[in-house]
Image 1 (tube, rainbow, N blue to C red):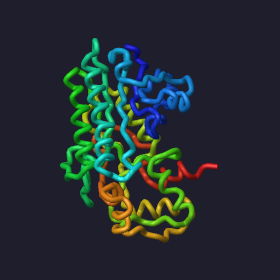
Image 2: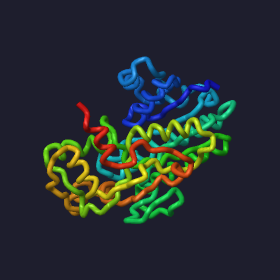
Image 3: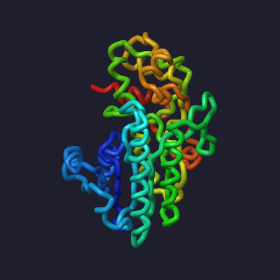
Image 4: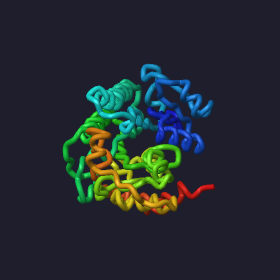
Length: 303
């Protein structure tokens, strides 16, 4: 086994590309599994190896960790039945292929870190949610649950499996902030619906540190909430973002308008998940950014 070799699927997206860049800076040898080798080269140059198919991967035992982040963007298009099927297939079918590849290896990869999201809990109102909380059923909840159960099959091969239940990742090159910044900078930002829905966020710096901890800490396994310890509701998030940008908070978007605009996908912005990272805190993980204002200022207060 190459003790510094990491495989990342979904390595050209917002999270995957940030992870690949950080790991290469720390002298890991990174391989990116992507259907577009050209995009990998355009993103990373020669600093990573590009492989376009699971069938072309070397033996899984040669990797220190497999980080599975691939999946069509859940915010990118309205949820037609065809789109929902693509969201499932792009996550679950690839995960099935990776698990089968690990099972066929001369020795298993030491750890599979597989993507998930706090959508696994469904819409839960004001209830505090930990990794052991029950779920309420909707499309995104079922998608995450099926994705997780598929990844957990790798435990049968002897691999350690970590499920990273990612919240709203805040960074300057993508994610939710990229979608929100233009209207807020124009002074057109406001709460969504009644603004009472909880938003469980995490700074990209801390999300990357969580993944690195999963790679290096053999005691970590099972689900982890990758969210900061202090979630806020949408009204508070909107006010904080407007304040950091020194812009007014003017125009709320009514719930009915959001549902007309987004259809079923409106559940992503109107649903409420008040998530806390109970297992990370219990295992001593230290968040650099635990307060929203501090996180936003780090990202946005730059020359």
